[in-house]
Image (cartoon, rainbow, N blue to C red; front, side):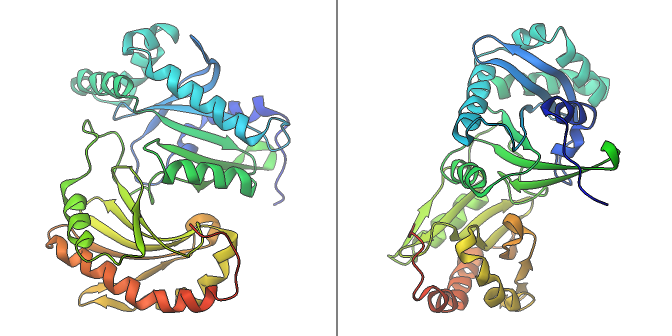
Length: 332
């Protein structure tokens, strides 16, 4: 089948209004559309308001690649929507959408759960926990770079999702180009506490005691920290990732300049990192650039995940340094 263009942004909006599940990753809470074209007090008209069954509000900004609006303007407008939503109480937002928020939540959960999920939604709004999704028909490197940077350097929950159309709209194929979590199994940002999981915090403390002087711990999100090595490109870093029941020890390729590293690192997939802990090569990560992933159960002492990261660094840094010799991509 050949991919077909959307006639206009309204068509893509309509598709997502009918099929909001296209915006969710596998294993995530169910989602439902609250209302299309929501008039917010200050930021203007939000393309789509969605909510999940755990009470997480989701603001969706829809743009076609042929839209002349600059990528920076698109992101700035989307942030404005989130800021405006965060100023509203649950009752104020429900009034704006004429009761649709309560109606949708009542359909998503059992009657005995409604009060709890309504309270969770109110708490998320009050705390500014709103997921932002920029939905497009195609994404260039500039837009991907901007969204990736915001994810890596802030606590904002932002995704970039590309939707392709086939068979006159009968078939829609979503691709998450940038996600705030590693995959659908990653820890949800709807927890009532904004604090980092104690297990991940303990791992970071354990690793920090032996962290090489040329390695810098970065990021402020509660479900990951990435490790940038001096002299390496910005799109290449190690990362601790929080999963349900596991801590990820990972090496990410996230820029075109390091895509070719996949041929060097992918053969490590399947090899043992520590006794009982093996590496996997995730070829689909970051526009199919790829990543190495090893997962350590949280019932293990935090030193185990720290040692796994040390082993991953030891196993890969020489290969990466050899690859980078003579390359001039800006360092992190």
